[in-house]
Image (tube, rainbow, N blue to C red):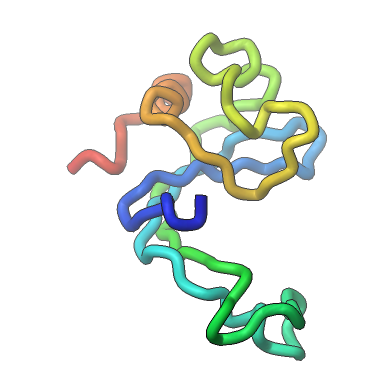
Length: 121
């Protein structure tokens, strides 16, 4: 998935470590993936001794805030929606921080939030 995330892609901010996990905001990728320099820094919290400059292990992207949702879309509501129920973030045992979202799922979230697509100019 690291190579699939591109500049211009939409991002859904999902708070998972709260009493009612929910999508709470939108962002956009503004820089394609590049090596996470903190993985090379022994003083950083995310230092990984296996990583080298020639073979980095971790990558990151830069994102730009677009909007907070007028109201959170809670996990329960996502799971009940015919399009959103298939989202990877809802699958049991899935703990990845980054999940792909289809165009149809992106549009469904915007519809539930009552927002126009901020990625369409």
